[in-house]
Image (cartoon, rainbow, N blue to C red; front, side, top):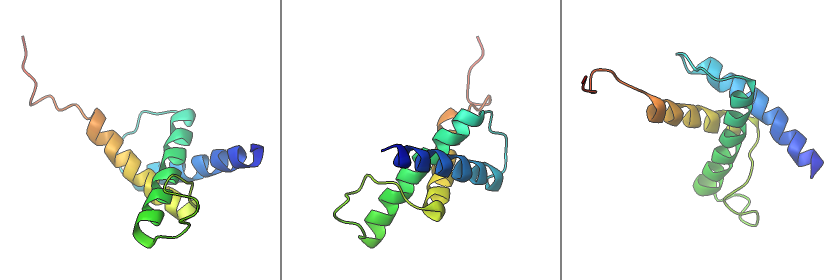
Amino acid sequence: MIGFLLYLLVIGIVAGFIARLLVPGPDPMGVLGTILLGIVGSFIGGFLGWALFGTDLEDGALQASGVIGSIIGAILALLVYRMVTHRDGSTSRRL
């Protein structure tokens, strides 16, 4: 169990940092946010690997993936995060 948590921590740091490096634009999140981004990306990558390739069927859909899958998942999670938190001033009304 401790080994899995350390694996998630290391993958979270690496995948989150690389995702933030590859996707241009400002991301106001700290180290903890970057780690969480990488961990979420790891599970997104694991789900995509399961859904697209049908590998590891005995483990199920909710599983952590390797480094490449984690980076791809973290990029997707970062783009979704930006879409959800993006505030466009042109569509809001002023009182």
